[in-house]
Structures are given as structure tokens and as C-alpha cells.
Length: 319
Image (cartoon, rainbow, N blue to C red; front, top):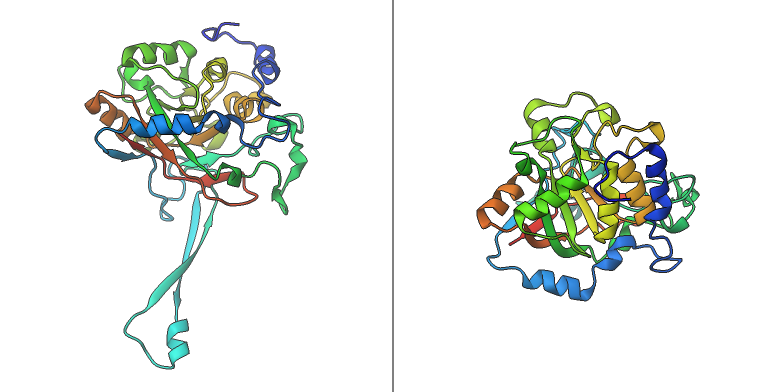
């Protein structure tokens, strides 16, 4: 099947679980998935590409006053507590004070976050055949925790600006990004996605929601994003990480409820492809145009939290 074919039936998408699978490719006990493509050589080459040192953050603030700016789910509840332990220890008032806080965070949601390989399952299995039952509310993710990505995502980043390809600030709600869009953006920008890359796809989705507000909440919201037909492109290019200024998938997906988010499901389960949702890519797109470069050093460091399926992150692009 051509990666340019967007007229996929649900049955054809389901076959991607087999035809695009990376299960066993890096060993039966592999926990890293596509992070295996970020080799020492890939990291060194990416670092050597830095020219000016100009840096761009690809995340928004995590703000408890606006915990769900994209209507994708609350991201944080924060509580502050003043501390008096020092004063109590010395038995008198001191000239300095300190504050500590408790932060409760739901990484999946409107904030920029890394999706780990335990996040989605299909027919009772996660990536590489690990049982989905290994992830529980009490025990956490025992096989595919985010902490396995301890080396982070340090690689070449490539931005494909699909909004600019169509001459708009943001794509229409529910507008799919096709494989033809991806390859046309490569040609327009003079860049080619290659193994080990962090591929970032700019649709303008987050900017549109922040400007106009969401039209619905969660899976009911119409959002621009990748069509399921892009999955062979991701597998053939051996992308290490996929980032998007939305939830990756076009919504609605065009398929039944089992494939509400086929890019999420096939990417995480079959490819072992790590995802970064709800990135801030508007400034990056502008800087890429100014620099006339759509490739850069990319760094995202998820927290080394054991037993979790996601981590908040502040990815950075360096030119």
C-alpha cells in the first residue's frame, strides 16, 4: 500500500498493527521502542548542527489558574504551604522564610506532555506484546514506564509546517494531514525526515483553540491532525518521536469507536513510537522561517518517574 493512499478502510488500518509492527525488532524485552533509533551517532550529529545557539521553548506554562486551556483535560492542581520548621527549630522568628508546595499533576491533558508506551493498548497488549494488565491503578506501569526514557529525546528535530503549506495560520477544525502533505512540506522546505528524527507537525491547532476556544471537550472536539494514512510514513522513515500541536490524530478520525485515535493507538502499540502532545509550535514555525532552517537540535527530557504512562515536559529547539 502506498503511503500516499488516504482512502483507507477500517480493515486496512487494523492491518497496520501487523504490517507496521516493531515488536521484537530490538529484542523481546525491549522497552524503548523507537528511541532505539536515537544512537550515539545520531545525537552527536544533531549536536553538531547547532550554529547560532538560538533556543525556542515548545511548551506553554503549566498554570493552575488555567488548568485546561485546550479542553483536553485538567493538567495540574497546585497547593502552596508555608513552612515554619526552621523557626520552630531555633525557637525564635528568623529574617528568612521558605515556602514549599505540593503539586498534583495529570500529565495527560492540555499541557505539553510525553506519551509513554504503556499509555495505549490494543486487544489487551501494549508495545512489544507486554500485557496491558501489567499497568494497574495500584502498581502503575510495571513494564513500559516513562522512566525507561531516562536518556530523553536528544536528536535532530524537523518541523513540517503544514499550516504554511496551505497558506494559513491554522488548519480547519477536523482537517486531516495526509502523507501527501508531509512529503509536499518536505519538498517546500528542502528537508527530509530520516531515522532517529523527532518529527514535529505544525497544524496551528493549539493556536486556534487558544484564539477561538474549543468547540467541544475531549474526543468530541474537532481538531486538525494526522490521518491514519500517515502511519506508514512514520514507520518507513523510522521516526524516533512524533510531536504535534494537538493530540496527533485528526478528530473525528473517520473510523469507528475502536479507532477514535488510530495514530495514537497504532503508533504507541505497534510501532513503539513515543508521542509528545499539545506542543507549542507557533513560535518555532516563525523562527524556522526567519532562520530559513526547518531542522534543529531537539531536546525533551521526561521526568524519571517510575510506573507512569506520561510525563510533563518542556521540549526545546536549538538552532
